[in-house]
Image (cartoon, rainbow, N blue to C red; front, top):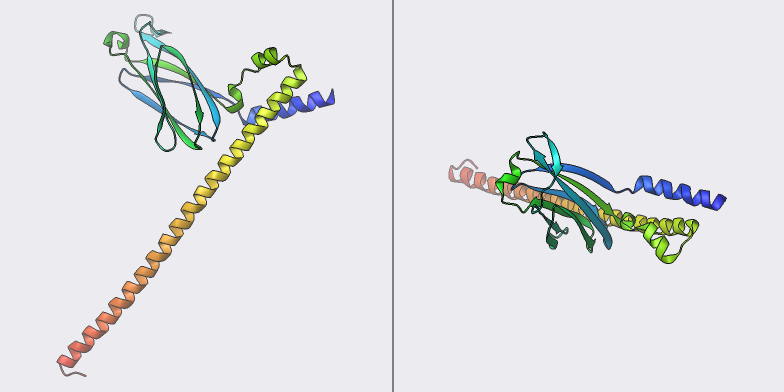
Length: 220
């Protein structure tokens, strides 16, 4: 009993730290919306969206009409396209990151029918799930015939694995920041040395020039 309570508390704490998030936004006919998601490597990401069309007559958003679709494009930190696909008015896209860093998720409508955008607005509800949140645990429990405690232990192991990936990603970011800082400091140092050499050479040239001037005027 105590073990079950302990496992439940740990899962609750991890769930508060690492949670999926959802949002909605408005776009026009040719408008493109992009979002940045920092994702560790070898992490599965699932995105779900649904669209609602603005109706001027009722003054509210209605479910999107058939034929209206969304184009989803995802780029990795190296600006390489890892997903580019056309979906319907409601859709679900999945990809796995192979490079840690900022991934760009872009959506825009594929419709060219101005009648669909008479009000000029389309509301898109977007829900992004990262890591262990992509797992369907009720389905896993039914498939593998897991008890409640076994399922919670499975969730805990998945969350620990995701935390390790997050920690590795943070170390990766710290290493890149350190390399950038060292490179910047080295450039500043070389620039300071170059400035000092230029000042010394300029001073030597001025001294020689003044000496030649005074000798020419027979002042020395």
